[in-house]
Image (cartoon, rainbow, N blue to C red; front, side, top):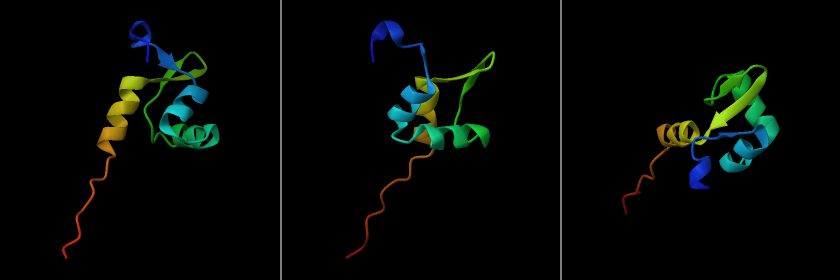
Length: 67
């Protein structure tokens, strides 16, 4: 991401592409408040740093199976 846009917000399409999901899935997550978002008047926007933190919080570590 461009350094000058580091604090910029992402649209639904951009955030869905960043997360690797569909816009429909992202809208469902927003309506259930499962993903962090910002409301700008009636628009929904996403901050990359919030999405990164959310991904990190929901990271499931790999468990090595014992031989």
